Image 1 (tube, rainbow, N blue to C red):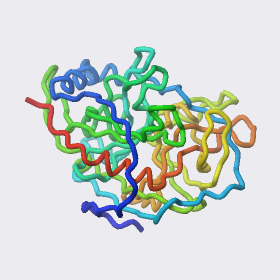
Image 2 (spheres, rainbow, N blue to C red):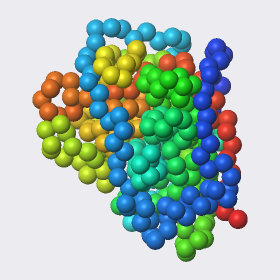
Image 3 (cartoon, rainbow, N blue to C red):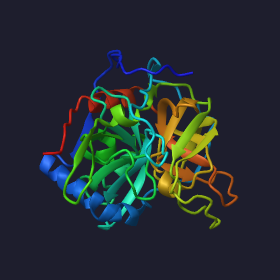
Amino acid sequence: MVTLSSVLVTLPAQAAVEVATVKLADSSAVAREVAEFWLADDGANLRAATPYTVHTEMTAERSTAEIVPDGTAGSFGPVAPGVPAAPDGTLPTPSGKVYFIGDDNQPHWCTGTAVQGQYHNLVATAGHCVFDVEAPMGALGKWVFVPGQAAGTAPFGLYVGKVGTAPYPFDDVRDYDHDYAFVNVWRGVTSPAPGTFTNIGRLVDVVGGQGFAYNQPVGPPVDVLGFPAGAHPDGSRPYTGATLERSAGATFAASVGLPRMDQPVGAESPFTGEGSIGSAWVSGYAADSGLGVLNGITISASDTDGDGRYDTGVSPYFGSEAAQVWRRAMKNWTGIITR
């Protein structure tokens, strides 16, 4: 059972790592424009968004290699939600969708997760759901997080991204061993009338946040939380992307083809790639609270046995570097976007 905690424990000293940052909406004025884009016309652009289809599939298989942690294991507990259920009965949850404009100038989404951090403003997702890997460099446009997403609505507010942080090798050479990112978001808003916003507070204060774990052993099961929506290779579509799904399965060392990865981790999961990219891998998941500790992020799906159905999610291993990137990201303060 994971102990809930709102107190952030200091990480042990580690060698400094180099990170890449991208500006998203770096002023309150720009953030208001982004919020208006997504919330206008009763969330028409949220409803029009489609699952991101970039790097949703890998050829992976189980590996006999051993993943050796590069430091001491650490774990920090989650934070419980601070609000009750929405009027329609939707429960607050750290899980949600990240929305953005892709390189094709169309609205898309991935899965994202609110995570424990110093200013209670942190979202974790796949690096390629923040950094535009189809362009020479830079960020995906109009980036926001909507926790507890339901049918294009924002039951617990909309949170505009201010800055994204990822390991430098991902931004520099698209090294998928580093395909994860943390985004600091402005305080959440709702829009009671066109062009007006109401501040509803800091993300983790509202919906809670998963804890964070690193240098953990590979083998124990994780719960994968996400919004799968695409088809299996055989064409079947068991998921719609409309509701949060959970699967539980063992983790294992994996090997993948292109893009090359040195330490990929697999998790037994039937999620399809589209929609589930960015899904949280949660250790110590408690069904009654929906909380645990983040220990991986789905960056792609794989059909390892060739039966035409995805059976594995793939994540970078969260070692000491991931802990350092998390610690660097959490230092970014945001603020409010309402006038």
